[in-house]
Amino acid sequence: MQVNVKAGDEAALGRFWAEALGWGTSVEAPGVVNVEPVGFAWPDPTALVVDVVRVPDPGTVRHRAHLDLATTSREHQAELVARLVGLGATPADVGQGEVPWTVLADPEGNVFCVLEPRDVYRDTGPVAAVVVHCRDPRTLARFWGEASGWGVHEASEDLVRLRSPAGVGPYLELVRADDLAGVRSRTHLDLLPEPGADQAAEVARLRALGATEADVGQGDVPWVCLADPEGNEFCVLGAPPRPA
Image (cartoon, rainbow, N blue to C red):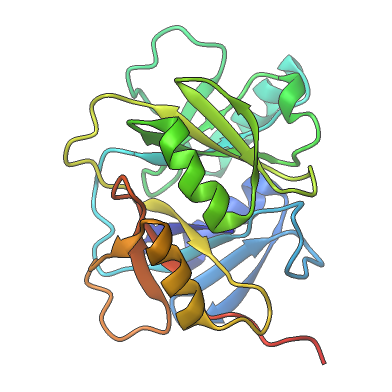
């Protein structure tokens, strides 16, 4: 599983996120910058690679999906917020009120949160979770669990946490939200099949689970755009070759 962030300037936004996470960058293709831990080799469940992808007009939208960043202490949280602001992040108001976490926007306006220290995220690395707002977390968790192979770590009517079966790395969190009409996001999930797997077979499997075709103006591209049962768009990438 990977995270896709739309950008007007993928190089600049990629540099921001690399500095924010303490990771490196690589250029996958024209218009695509991968932000990943130094020395990362897929598949590695300890990290979710962030793909920053240039699009003609990334637009300004409400945010249905976002990243949460982990901290280890209140001091670390304050230091991280200050460092991110120095890199170009700005405070953001999404109606959060008085909360112990800090809401920021990256230089292109993508909202994310810097969390106060929480035990559940003590071993996730810099990204605590990818958060997706939805109407029915339990039902959507069944789809994403089957789609990704991740297991349920915690479940309630308002929140379901999924995590790699290796028990490491960030969480995928499905959070109940009631007002989602017309909401689209500049951030979404991508699925990268296992090395050597057949992309068409994977797309067929996901459609059988309830995914539907999605047209986001992608044109002729090597990935396949789908939407989950609640309309969240995601892409199925071409599988990498098997190691020699």
